[in-house]
Image (cartoon, rainbow over all chains, first blue to last red; front, side, top):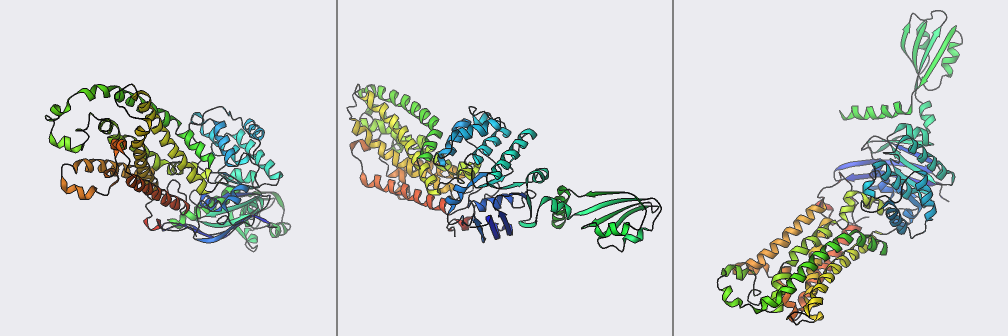
Length: 303
Length: 278
């Protein structure tokens, strides 16, 4: 029994002389929802396309439920539902014809009533012609085709792109339902709130390397916190200098001190116990700030 | 494979109807005019034509009163260009257009092998060309009995085999090239250019004998056109068909052994042409 839905080791991919992936290592547990976060061009889509064997890496090992997609691509595709980041459909087809075509590609093993149910939940009209659909409605067609065969693994590249907030919530519900039925969801996104809402675990990719892999709450918990402390009487701010991981940001007459704390607050609280504290406010960094921290450092390096 | 065959035929439905209808109307017009043309003494008329022009079209002008000369001059002679441009354009787009649009990225994520996708589409493409030519053939066969052409359906069918072989040769070459060059339209432009250049040089070689050695082994030089009514040159038909098959096999091999392209990843990548997927 393989514990991982996806296992990637040392994945390297070149496009000509450009190195898109610099040794990606990633494990996705079975039945989890993993958010794959990264700025444009970081390697999200390239990684997904390597998993599907649409492109071949120069180095590295990929396993999907223990199966090598390069050796048995069709077996992997049988287990996978895929939504590409730049979805294109046959313009002259009606939605129903397009979905029937996808159904036929899976050997007609899909219950059409389930397709209709998905379309109804996403408010998608099956009788309309693809070319007359808005980008959001085309995205719904993509979501339906990815979900309709109740696969073991969902690979979704920017799943809610172009959808209105109500439909985004419906897609989140559908993905959670799929997960509750045992499906592993691997989705890429650069919408941090989406990852924060949906993902159980987050992997951040930057410049073709996984730079962070954690639970969203752990990731935000590990971050630097800003703490504002108001005292009943003025204190000497130097007391904070002795605490490891604490940096003084500002001090107003020793009665209002703002500090930055890296890691947990245990030592700070114990130190504060000796002083007359009037109020204490903490603000943890959001996933967005953490993501931006990686992104900004990336940009600084490239300058 | 049948799913892709049906998909391709549905995709080309409009083309089959459009080309079929257009060729039917043209063929009906040509058939209806034959009886009148056959009565005209073209010998005296041709004396006034520039010799270079007569030479360009080969023997067809001299044989215009005969069914084979008439059909060669007014139909088969330049249908390699007219339908050929469609065959080349469709061949170049057959797989790569969907790849450029991003649809193939999705289609290949389904549990169908690349071979099934490739050969299903090729089959759909061949059937499309056959249907267009079949409609055209029917529009010659049905009214020809009421004219003085005196040709059987079988005799009328002969030149269509040669035309189909030429269309498949240039179409499959366009398909192969689309797997190598960065965009389907580049493949289409190159092969269309070669097709037109071949047509012109074959005609010009009748005027300038120095060109004979250049065109001797080109596809349109061995194309019989309407003269196939008198008897098919099986060697030439076989060579053309084998050429088409060779191009298809090479295109298939390229499709199996290359990365799928998406927007922004184009490029000539000439050193990757002969690469294998490990």
